[in-house]
Amino acid sequence: MTRVWNTPVFAIALVYFIVDGVFSYVTRPITVWLARLRLLERVRLWITSLPPYPSLALFAVPVIILEPAKPLSGYLIATGHFFAGAIIFIAAEVLKLTVVERLFQLNKDKLLSVPAFAWGYRYWRAMMEIVESLEVWKAARRVAVRAGNVWRAVFHRPRDVRSESRAHGRRIFRSN
Image (cartoon, rainbow, N blue to C red; front, top):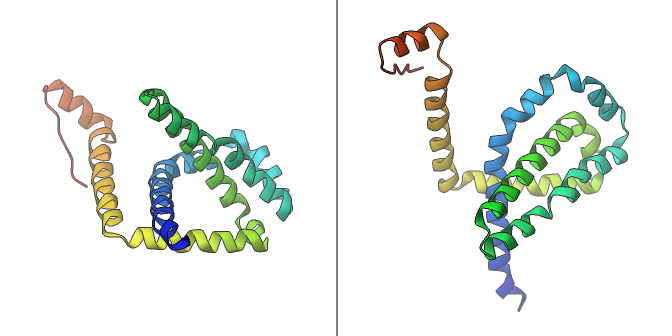
């Protein structure tokens, strides 16, 4: 009987890891931006001063608070409240991954010194390596890179090129 459940559980776990992986690529620039803020310097110093187990407890807080939003969003979507469910899911996922990734960056060595966390991290990395080796993942990454290139070409042009293109009433796309 347990073999019957293995395939659906694996499929659900695979979807979960894919969604987390996609959202982590979205939240990475936010995390980098937060790392540069001087406003959060005192918080960063406090977080990095924590020993391993309090660091683990702090790391778990955003997961414990924001993870239940996923079933709630699923319930809302299933009951016909698609927009509210989607907003709750996206907001909770972006917040969770941004905060969790930043906390992990700040305390990686301490967190990996906790044996149970190190085991879970190795397991997660193994799952992510499987997901990242899938052709679907590679195709999605290529699409994301192309979209990023178009975004940069359109919105990150020098000001003189933008004003010149507006003055002539047409858009100029630069290739990198």
